Length: 287
Image (tube, rainbow, N blue to C red):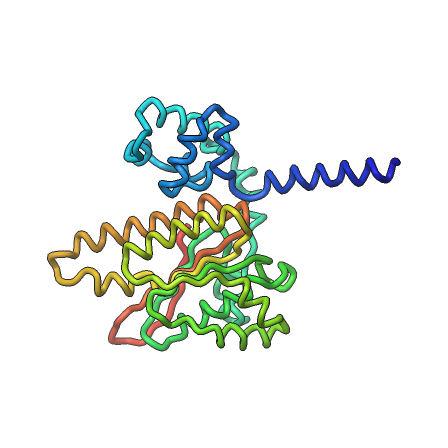
């Protein structure tokens, strides 16, 4: 009897831990007095977590049909109660930073340059000329993010948004063989989508947000973030519109990193094609 009670208590604790793990699903707002109808409207508009609502400006909520100013105020108030958005001590922030892990790139020397690997909870940008290895690194990370943490992995799945048609599952199988992983399992853990225009690219990011809220994804890859902008926007006359659209897309990435990054240990990789006279390859991080 005692063993049965102990087992039941352990299951309850695990259930509570699962509920508290990761970002808060948008349905949590129903427990705070927000109607199911309004929660559904938020979800249909691309808000899948409480964090995404808390981080959104009020004017964005007002664009949702059926959400009045009074409702928007109440939704933001309840979301802010669930998501800490005020000041904190440097000690607490340091503790959060200590929980961040690094995902190996597959290259010891590159990992050294990055301080151990690709950092979770942030965006890592890879840019360089054609055929400098950007896409290969993205493929390698799509596999290494599935490794255990003690092997410099992220113990999670990968979301891969491909804008240039360069994704090749065969590359994943080769990397999986290098690390002794099951090729079939590795492929099953990679969710792939091809983006065909800049609007579609942004829409896929909204879908990725929903998927990352429901399951553990250790990595989001966008390869390449800028390729479609070169064809969808041409000439100086569309320069301003292109920059604004690209800025919104990058802002969506930053918000996604804030929503799920540190909590579920996710990393975001953005590949950007550059055309320069000199062959260069570099990485930089956005905090």
